[in-house]
Length: 78
Image (cartoon, rainbow, N blue to C red; front, side, top):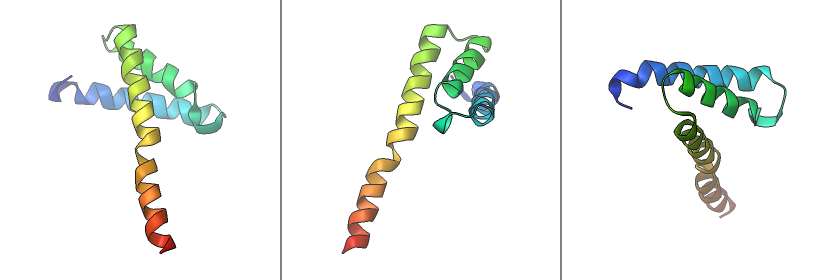
């Protein structure tokens, strides 16, 4: 993926976010991933690598705020 693929990646993300918001499950778990993989596969990425990319993306977006929250909690408790 390069700068020329940015519009396609943005469209895939928006499709996944829309699916996650439309289906009433906590955090859009399942529907968001399926929509993201489908959008990436429609964009020409093989399903296997698309699934890996989506799972890494969801893991990073889920776990990245945790260290910041831990640091904020420790700072505010002082």
